[in-house]
Image (cartoon, rainbow, N blue to C red; front, side):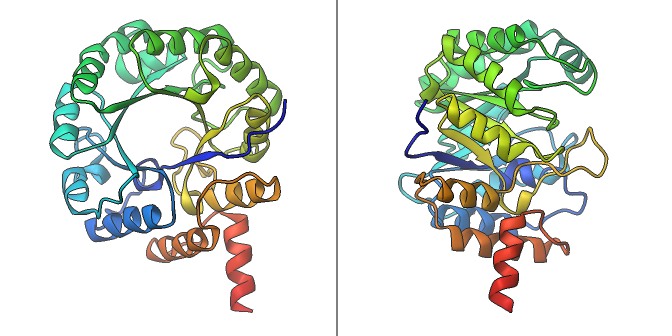
Length: 302
């Protein structure tokens, strides 16, 4: 299959990237991060999370972040909403898209939210209905689609089952997420091929973590199955809570560098993204995990 000529990058660093940071990142920095990412040309920025601050204290200022960002016309600002309370916060905050999340792993679902996959997704039905009534886009994320920290291998049929449940609820986009970064290209091809048999590839996105260094290869494998939406995080922000010391999200700079080499258009300013990654890493007092970003920064400094 020919590779897509254009790819949509969903930048997740303000939410998925920062949520595991132990030190609270000031609201001013979060707002600037979102604004700089939107200005760099990302069509979709995951800006905040409306979850209980008790569970994710880093995201406690979600409403303030959403109130203070400079809305760029045409940019989709997404927020994570686990329930109706979260949705009400998202609605008040003027979110363009809400993100719901269910696991493809029964063990993960039971361990994290004490219910089955089917029950967890059924809980989202009122949230999705409310979002659709309000004209807000809905994205459904399938976590542990390529492996689970508790049960290990996850059957392809389980991923397809969650995708079909989301489709029945009329979500706009479905994320196939390698939450712990254990996927490899062969498995990615199998999973994406199976999911695209039940859903339009234009509505499917790949969310890959780089725990085992496979994320770029997995993105290429997904591209080869017709997927053209990917989630990335500037400077590789976002740890993996289930693998100590492991990196989390694939670095945006690395993905942009690869896509540019494949002559695939993203509409995103690569040099601006390198600057953002270096700026954010400096604020966090550590080197970012983007090889391309760090290489370009070193070249500039030479």
